[in-house]
Image (cartoon, rainbow, N blue to C red):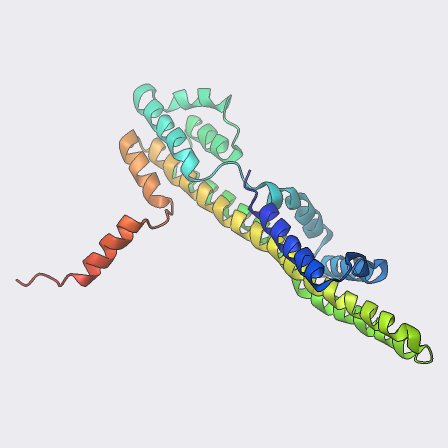
Length: 268
């Protein structure tokens, strides 16, 4: 589990509560049912209207993944694929069928089954590329839904503020209540901005990043299993897959790169 979304949201709302406490304001003054119902209900409603019911259902089903993250990364699968390469070299491709019982990753399981069934390498690549394309499209759909909510929420909040200010203008004959009503009117704008930047956009961005990591993992599995099918040596498979995984630049690598850029080219 990768708790980065939970940590980020807790810190964001913690900073908000800290500001409220420092300013001496009251949290209950922000928890007004009417503007919150309009902002959250209206935002989700127009978000549904921009797509299909199927898109909405898929986005809701993807919500737990945004908080949980993905258990398996591209780098964590390299040793497993190298093990399959070793099995294929020593026992033959048909021996990979025994690994289907314990394999839980559906994409890797499908590739093992296809190799064991004797599917041609070109056909296997086409099949796996189609699966990667479909997964990327599903991930974009979920991410786009929450990004769309983040775009609508501030505007819906402004609508709520305008409605509340209209009510304020109807009660100008009650000067003792104007301050409270005006403050309450701007709560809708606050929740519009708050929900967009503290909830919807972070969730959408998180799902987008998880989608990118999933495509990276699936691409690595595809290249690795195609190498296994081709009978490549396990050491070569491992080195190739490690080269495909994006690694952060270390200080030593950075110093080496800077030194290489600074050194003049040798003269003939």
